[in-house]
Image 1 (tube, rainbow, N blue to C red):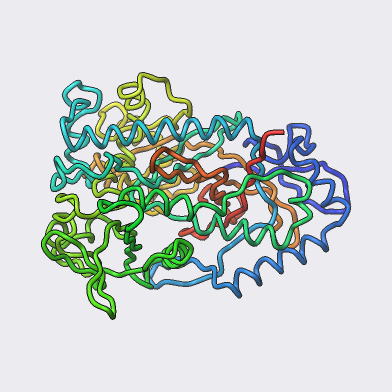
Image 2: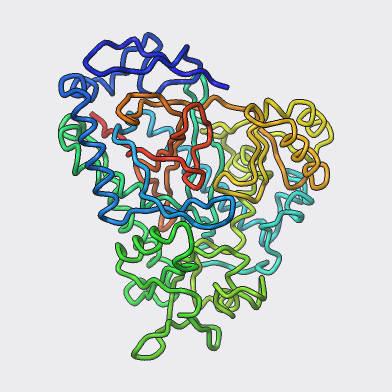
Length: 491
């Protein structure tokens, strides 16, 4: 595993010795001096010292607690444990030039994946032309035959996306995975910024930081754009599974910020291929459903018949053009981890362009050579279940036991389509203030894109931090934390 970072920076703050640098460090250069865009912040920290950081960290935790900013971490017994959102006060800073590449790469990726979904549920040219093996799609858990030939409003499937990025040892940005079903985390991105502005206004005085707080406004505009009865009269609801969902805080946050109704499946009813919201004044027709319910539970007449979370008949209403569903059902096949390996080919096929953002090398378990290689080298691999998210269904080879590797090998052989493998990337690290010390922790970045009239990428994102020393697992559902993400404006 990665040895820890050693800082030789002098000053009033004490850094724990963390060993030689192997991963790219976001904060420090190779000679252990802060990178240029961190110098104003570092100079202020050096002057004010550790006592200031400790007080600010306490204020941030107290503010998050008082405002009820929480997340649920599930234990091994499947009992939810609600905790205050874990937040590190030292922001991640992205220079304007770096962000331009990220933004262009995400827009390119979302545009290509949207065309891919439209093709997949209509003519399937990409399969007929042999770019992607048909069996890879047909055997995918999230390919929905039930929605073939449905035309979503404006041909948009990927309305809301969260694209996970990492930086490799050379500092190159790589796409780790795409989140196109019900991507979460945007409310925490906004709360991070609100808290940071409140407790560290002196940092903001030294930088020109682009705003992220307007995300709900952008989302509302995109949802209104989809309304079959026109934008001015659009009735929008956020469909939530309920209070026991780990992201329920986000569901309530977005509904409140957009000024729309938060509804559970039992609050909606379908009649004559139209969806209605039950109110104290009678039924009110709904035009757009921003659903945070997975496909399987969305409509018991089409998908799982035992679902109590969805709305019976909503797919027929969608097919009839009487309601828009965000994100479109069936979009999950485009963020299937087995399909991920073909995204560069998808970009070239539909756009005739080379990918702006590179991908992590990926081994397909349905390929005999890849399978044999991975089984012989499991201790150096990250192995992932293709339809899982949140860090579940994953084997971190370097930290695994022989028993765990044997168990995964058996599962892979039994169902090779359900797994992919990737080499371990020593993802970048950043300075964090933890337990009164400055330490380095691994992190990634999830920028959020909204596809309305055009594709908008909010300048920032959710930086997720592996709070455990040496860990590469940053997922919030696995106990990870977060940072505010600052994208600098052009000079």
